Length: 294
Image (cartoon, rainbow, N blue to C red; front, top):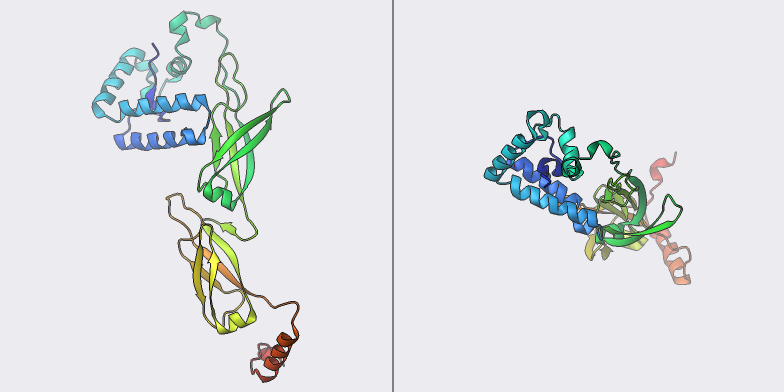
C-alpha cells in the first residue's frame, strides 16, 4: 500500500506548519487543479482527490499528529520528508507507487522521467476575458500531427495570467507522468475599451454644442449602460471617472471606467448648420488663441 506524502501534495516543504498555513496551501492547490480550469483532464481529477484527502487529514490537529507519527516511524529519521530533509528517496517511492517495495525490482527499472512542460499563449478580447469563454487551441505534436484542445477561460482572468492543463505537455518516459501545458492569456485592447490594470478607458464623443451647453447622455461599460451628466464647457481631453464599472480585480471588486471627452466637429455641414456656425463666429467673444497672439 502506498503511503502518500500529504505535505508534498499540498506543495508544503515541511511538516512544521500551522493549520492556517495548511488551509492556505489547500486553497492554492485546489484552485490550481480545479475541474473548471482542467476540463476533461483525468490527471487533474486524480490530483484534486489527493488534495482533498490530504487536507482532510492535515487540517485536523489530532489526525495530523497521527499521520506525522506513522510517517516518521515508517521512513525513519534519515528520510523525513516531513522535515524537508533527505526526502528524495521517500518521495520517489510515494509518487512512483512504491514500485521497489511492491516488486523488489528497483535495480532493474529504468529511471522514470516526467515529460517536459509546453508553454504557449493566446490572445483574447476584453469582453471574452470579462465573461469567460471556451477557446479551441491547435498544437502540433512531436509527430507533426495537429492536436486540438478546448481551453476554458475563467471569468475575470487577469492579463498575462497562465492556465495550466495537467498532462497535456510532452509525454513522460518509462511510465513517468506527462508534462503540463501552460497557456499565457494576453488580453487585447478593443475598438471601444482599453485595459490598464483593472481600469477601463473609453472615449466619450461630444458635439461642439453638447460640450458648450452640457448634456445628459449614456455611456457603455462592459455589462451595462450608465447615465452620466456632462457639465457645460467640457473640454477635449478631460476625463470622467465612473467608479466600480471597470474590469475585475482578483478580490472580486472592480476597477473604474474612465471616459475621455473628445469634441467632434462634423466634416460636412448642411446649409442651415453652416449659417449657424457663421453667425456664432460673428457674435461670439470667445477667442481661445488670444493669448498666443503677439
